Amino acid sequence: MFKRVLVANRGEIALRVIRACKELGIETVAIHSEADALSLHVRAADAKVCVGPADSSLSYRNIPNVLSAAEIMGVDAIHPGYGFLSENAHFAEVCESIGIKFIGPSSENIALMGDKAKAREIVAKRGLPVTPGSPGELRSEEEALQAAKQIGFPVIIKATAGGGGRGMRVVSRVEDLGRAFQAAQAEAKSTFGNDGVYLERYFLEPRHIEVQIMADQHGRVVHLGERDCSIQRRHQKLVEETPSPVVDEKLRREIGRVAIEAVKAAQYRNIGTVEFLLDKDKNFYFMEVNTRIQVEHPITEMVTGIDLIKEQIRLAAGHPLAIRQQDVVLTGHSLECRINAEDPEKFTPSPGTITKYSPPGGFGVRVDSAMESGSTVVPYYDSMIAKLITHGRDRQESMARMKRALGEFTIEGIKTTIPLHRRILEDPDFQKGHVSTTFLERFLAK
Image 1 (tube, rainbow, N blue to C red):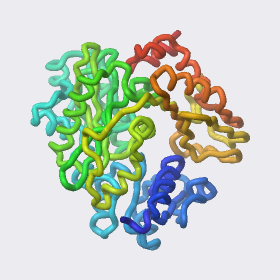
Image 2: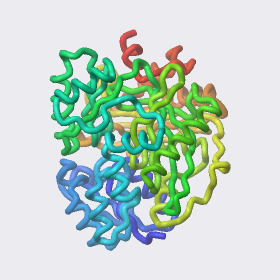
Image 3: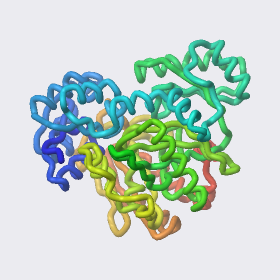
């Protein structure tokens, strides 16, 4: 097992990793920007290193600075969390070259699965269902037009190195394709440093279903059930739940089998998430593999009793999977609401000082956050400041706990999306499980 791990992230995920390391008896080193010098994750670690100014490109995403901190502090592994460098194949490769273990898949895995178009090709060659789309990366507007005509409108243009809804454009008409293609390329270039894009059929009102997998160095893979992440705004997830209200045991076995086959096709190792679209007829299609821990991983932990961060660390250290597929039992139902520092009406950022922070508690309630009274929400990073997770014997009890917990959650001094989540939980369609990726558009229009 590792002796000292550098946590190359900030906020709640950094604190989450530090806590897991402490339970495993591993020393931790927190990196931080100048803006985060007094943050909770910094105080929780055994050691700390400032890696640059507030701008993440000069600090958290500054590979030379992060690796210098790792070498100076004598760590034997780096946990990237999610975001920042977590899916940067070059970073993982450099870690490997200097003898520091990257806690995640190999650089080859990240490069292969990080290119969404190549990932689709690999999965399709295995005979697995993929969303109809272009055979690979599109080099020109002309190629995009030809692919769109073959697939049929509407289509969605996606960045090959994409994630978090960046570099995506939905196109319903031929005349809009050129402009959307250029916009998607430009956003992909500015966000990921790669302007590669590909094209898929755009399904109307699908569900976004993802499957959590764990794979060891010996080729063994298990899945931990599905998560329903359909409630999104501009491809950014807001509410997640497991199990999905529409996935029965037969479909769960089948989509789990396909997820395992997909990662085996890529010889994938460590923890990852296989994402699918599910249409109204319950046909599912592979979209991509996320080669990192997901923001919404806690709900899977709640229904399986498996600490995914600890498993991620153990797998990176070369430990074999301790469980078989038949050992995985899903118990009850779990929900997660992402609490963002945003105006819930305008969805504009709301940085500032939190004058009062009082999280909810009680049976079946979990809060993952690095905030406290007096914390400052700075404008330089993602606006998510907490994840509120509930668990119950069934969906009804999990929802009842979430309603109660949202009512207890007090954050003053800034605006948050708590009021929006309370409204969503009261919506009849949500309560019945009648949701899709277009749910929020209809909900906000009411």
